[in-house]
Image (cartoon, rainbow, N blue to C red; front, top):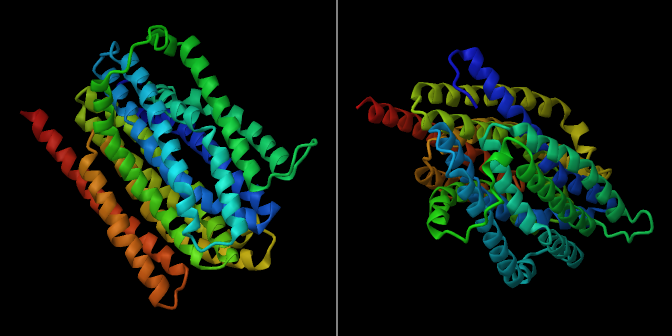
Length: 452
């Protein structure tokens, strides 16, 4: 990370940080992407089971790992101020917090998983696949949470290419594990969708071990000597991480969980509708990695500039990122509109599933535009460490506006299951408008504060 003086320098620096983050996010999501595609090729029941399992797992993982993303703005601002001595303690305490969070999730999941699945109106075979898929994933939960802390530290230093290479190394291994375990190759049992969960858990262990080795032995990370002096848990540092991280995690949770809630509500429809919805939401979520990556890059560069009290540069970076995300959303929105039928073939050979998936993707065109605004704006706000009001805005937009409206349209109009997607679009649009207003307010507040 370095100070920039011209618009060209800022574009270059943002690109250097953004592109590896994007590749990393696409790689991480590709694990779930291939889980879904390859399970769908095994059978519609396994596709539906993985869909239900993912709808329960993804909001929990993204929300709680979002708490650990607090390490990024904390380390970025420490580096911006030139205060590097506090960085190792912050990262180590983040690792402790990651282990604690993962253990809490595993215990809680063991208590509530059966009641949740039994309360859903799904076929018994789908319920079994969903449960066993989640159990398999749980064996990789602790390393995955630790990896998120290590990745936040690496990214906060601007060395985003490192996590990109780690992810690119692990992705082919995940696909091979999927192939072997889902379809039962090389003498292994054919586990179907459950095999996808086992493959992902093995891959999570792999990327965490690689990240640990890099942080411990390779520069510039080894200069921080994070694991050479092991301190006991520091509750005061946990508090700092959680004060920033909990609102971040809840904001992400409320956004992601609305998609999962819709999938769960879809259980009132037949297995084919669930499969079509899940295929479409999976591809739309794959595209969401673009604005999400821009969001993560903005947290780093905005946090660095705010730490150095260069508020004008922070503001330029913020709106540069939003503009870039919106431009890309228009481009891939057109691609979705034109090629949605061809995209559907990636997920299934069933004619009815193909038809439903293509129709769902039509609605995805519209909410991608709102995503392209609200995600980068949230990233910029995290760079300012403004997280509490953002969390409230996310809650209202997604759960007070988006989901209730979707439920009404799905159950009391002729839109049917597509009504949920219209509700999603409305919630994301409300979030984009309110969060943009919040960013303008915060930038004005900081300008007044430092002018005095």
